[in-house]
Image (cartoon, rainbow over all chains, first blue to last red; front, side):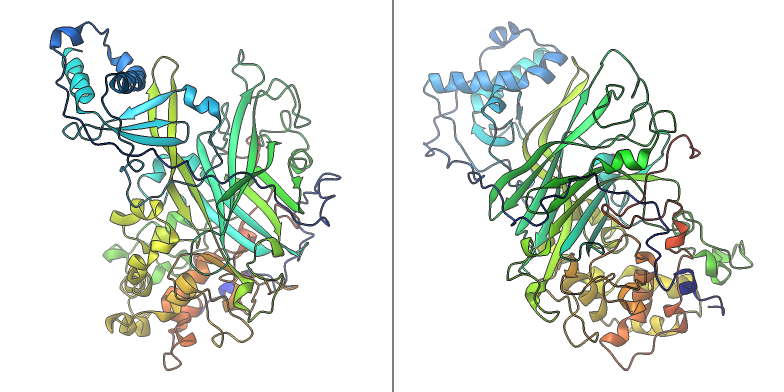
Length: 168
Length: 462
């Protein structure tokens, strides 16, 4: 390293705080500086415990291709409608006596825990919902809505979606 | 850069890309700590008509650990909402913006601040106005005073600001990323036999005309500590660890019908930052994206990257004969306890006279601030290695010369803190990219939010 002007010479011994742009807080913005520090408490953010996990039923066979073909499937409807299909499918499965399994939240990133959040507004459940199927062989659907997620095992629905996709 | 575009995935997502974290006892309100997290790297000031803004779909957080477990005890969450005054025009503004409620301002943001403490979330304030970007003398005249009105006072003596600021971090990117060139010493660079440089040259601040978006919050010290307010310097409870994260919702679907993205599901972390250059320089390319998703409490797995940093072996290779003692140290494969203390545990008592910011044995990348150290009346941007205990790595102030500090530490200047028998190379105490805080044209503010007035698009070449 050459003998050189020490780099520190560029650093003033003392910062001249007045020799900079000044940004003055607006009047009254800090009027509460002397107040006791208090925070507003709201209910804990932890989600309600999931319902009991019933046993899985036997897989329901996929509908015949002809039935699936009646659905108006386009690429756009897949992108926009997969949540709706999932939701309808899940509801139908419930009505038919099939079972929704509430597992731990999405397994997409096992090492990354969800961020603690304020409770969701009820309107969050009005949609949109997104259903994600990472692996079509296990029948698991990750269902996302608002800031929440749940997992559903429904091989029949997955098979139905696959059949529909083949016809799209 | 400090953490600008530091990992492959986050470099594609600028609004969620954290660039710098600052934590310091406020010089003008020494009963408070100021925490700043910068996002959106390398903003060209003239980048209209859709000027820069925080992501409405991003959850920004500043975390504080006050008991040494590297798990947040207090988190401040920031969410943003963009509204259009007139969707029928393409313009950002239709006349001068003279106030934050100006009807001439078309695309504006507000933010919500939420405190998460002990697992409980509480909205501190919502609908807080952000300032516009600094466009020019016709659109944003009197910008400094306009932006000042976006400093909001919250209950409990808290101040908050979220909006555009001048980039306060200075670094010679162009040279450093050209195979580790440091212009002041480039004639000594091995140059791969090309012999491009025959003499030294001054550093060039690559961020000199660029802006960022800052989230700044100033909080009474007592509200951040686990124990009684303002203990002694030696009190472990006086030390806090600070970092920022950005998170995105798990599922994103492109709604082709509306041309917008739909994001739903739990938020998961996509960006993390505490100490400058940690992920950028220490973590290997294949692990950078993963590192960004992990909490600091998981940093133990990367400890060897800190104690045996790749850059320490590169310096003697790039500058032959300049760092002989460092070369021997690297060859001995000695774990760098000095770097572990600076970056992963804090510096214990007894190492630096009158100072400690030790948080315990948990290895975690945190900006550690001993809040009992008062602001310096004669700040030295070289911080502790410059004899100023109120500067980096005791927290980080906006003007601290973190590039020179970390270069010198990695070059071996701090080894004697833990090994008195080691003699640093003469170059270790001088190595720098040739820049100082005076390389920042905007300067800094002497009051909150301390980072300078952003450069305007009108006056800054694209």
